[in-house]
Amino acid sequence: MLSSIFAMGQNRVIGRDNQLPWRLPEDLKYFRRITTGHAIIMGRKTYESIGKPLPNRRNIVLTTQENYKADGCEIAHSIEEVLALIDHKEEAFIIGGAEIYKLLLPFTSKMYITKIGQEFEGDAFFPAFDESEWALVEVTPGVQNEENPYQYEFQIYVRSVTNCK
Image 1 (cartoon, rainbow, N blue to C red):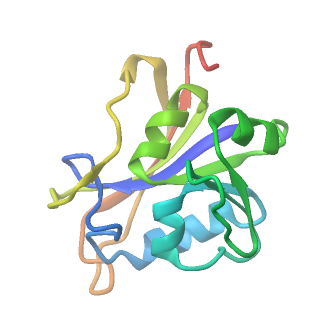
Image 2: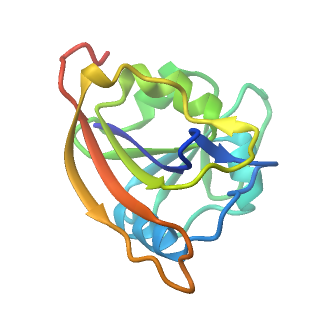
């Protein structure tokens, strides 16, 4: 099963200059808890912004650069290669960036969204999706405090119609 995991502001911003435009440690803990032990799929720019493979996960980098190498990662050059690499019985997570979310959205059956109650300046946005195709199945409010200065909640959506490729 292919899932997307991401945080976004009210204006769908997910990034700025290949970085997160906010500091929200609880979201990073959530991301780690949900993705550890699973395959993660990311674009080259996302991988390079992280700078290394994420531990305790199978790291797959999707890139059009033919001879691209990343130690500790598997490289895919097409959607078909990504889909061939993952075990469809296990949950695999798309972790960005915007182009990769958009490319793989038709194949995605679940979304883990950290919705931040504020608009942010950014240059990367989560693609628009038909909300009638998705059911919100879980909402967990986040705790706003000194370390996590924004209002936020963790939302889980599942595709409610069976047109997932």
